[in-house]
Length: 126
Image (cartoon, rainbow, N blue to C red; front, side):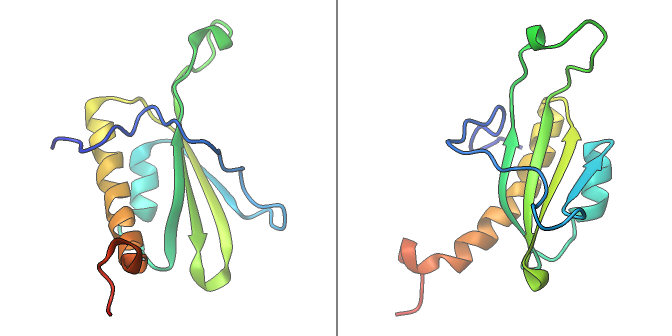
């Protein structure tokens, strides 16, 4: 699979916050990308809307010896029926395989968002 755009590292003008001010249940941490995908890969795209992701490049000098330097992938959802935000964090090495898996996951959410904003791209009903 050839990635159509670069997903690592991210360079967004704004970074989301972890969790939610109003709830202690708005954040999940996963041991791996595989564990995250088991939970969300087949989740309903409308009820679990991805609103943003961050996958920051790490500067090894910011860590002490022995500390985990694996980059953290952060994916942010809006749980539609409950209007509840959810942040999901996991340590993910940016290997080609992992980037392809993340790309595939994000791509379907991006395409779903495009459907909801079709009028802005000339694709909506007239």
